[in-house]
Structures are given as structure tokens and as C-alpha cells.
Length: 265
Image (cartoon, rainbow, N blue to C red; front, side):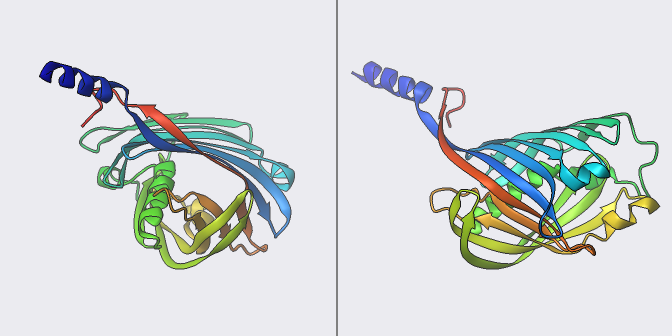
């Protein structure tokens, strides 16, 4: 009988499914309230221990007159007790007849290996230090970390050091007003946070505009059956009237992940 019970337990550990959330999100970017700037699609798979996220951005409308852009970014990593630790980040960016590829990985000790093609000739003053890189997440991992923190606490609070392959900056969330959000396929509770961009290192003199990005607003979805709060809207005031990235399509699915005996606790 004991052998039969052990065999049943082993079979259960081999095949028991774990639930994950998969979000397929589409956003429209607009400037001055109505001028189309581009579209963004996000595919995020998040469970209690891992995440994978891919974002694609393609410029259109007025923005194409100044800089035609196509960008694909991917990030993956681990989640432990709600804390996000990124492991790999890849960026493929085509803009103004240029093409830049970034591949970054984070070692177990936090050390970052970055391969950038073509490489930068200048790294800013001061350049990002090794210690700053170790304490940072990649840009997509920062979004995942914000979404998990807000989803768990239902508050806007925290500093998120970020390194994108060159620039080191800190995203800060504060404030927090819970309200109803309707739009883009989502109808439910949300929270609007103040969001600050704090430039730290890796910037050149010509990056003055990037250093002075004004404080914006970001709205996260709050759902009762998940700790992940996807972004619904981001708005930033600009001298020309402001820019907004807003949800245009929302799709969420529960995904069963097969748990093997090697993965089981």
C-alpha cells in the first residue's frame, strides 16, 4: 500500500498543473491629445516563480515624419516572494536608418554581461558603474516589478533602479487614487500613480531632454484574482501638449503550466 501511495504522489508531482496569467495587451500612443504616434503590443506570462514579457513598438502617423521606429524587447527572469529578478533582456531597435541590438544577462552574483551592436563610443559622464548595474533591472523587468508590487499592495510606492544597456535611471511611484477604469476592453478597478523618471548616469550633454522628463501618471488594473496589475495608461506632460499611451485591447487568459518532479518544491 505504501508503495502505491508513493507512486501516486510521484505521478501527481509530475503532472500537476500550476496556474499562470497570460496578458495580451495593445496600446495606442497619441500626442497633443489626438495625434497618432505609434502602437505597442505586450505579451506577458507571469506565475508565482517566473515571468516572460515581450513588447513591440512601431511608430506611425506624425512620429514617422521625424523618426521611423520599430522595436522589439524581451525580458525573462525569476520571481521569489513577489520580488522580480531579471535574468535576460534582448532589444532589437531599428530607427532613423540605424539598427541597434542589445543582449544582456544577469549572473547569479548580479554581474551583468552586455553585448551591444554597434557599441557606444561614449558612455556618458559619469558612466553607469558596475554597482549601479548590479542593483538595477532591465526596463521591462521594472514594469513587471511595478505591476506585481502594485497588484500585491494596492499602493503606489517604491523606487525601481533601471539599466537599459547604457542609461541608468530610477523610476519612482507615489500617490495613488483608486478609481473605476473603462476602456480598451477593460472594465474594473484601477489605481492611478504618480510616476517620476530620475536620471542617474550614462547621459551625455545632448541627452538634456531625456534628463528632464516631467513627472507623469500611470494607471494599473486591479483585479481580485491575481497579484499582477497590468498597465492601462501612461501619460506624460510635454511642452507641446503631452503624450499618452492608452490601452486599446485587453485580453487575459489563465494558463496551466505542467509541473515536473524536478520543479516541485
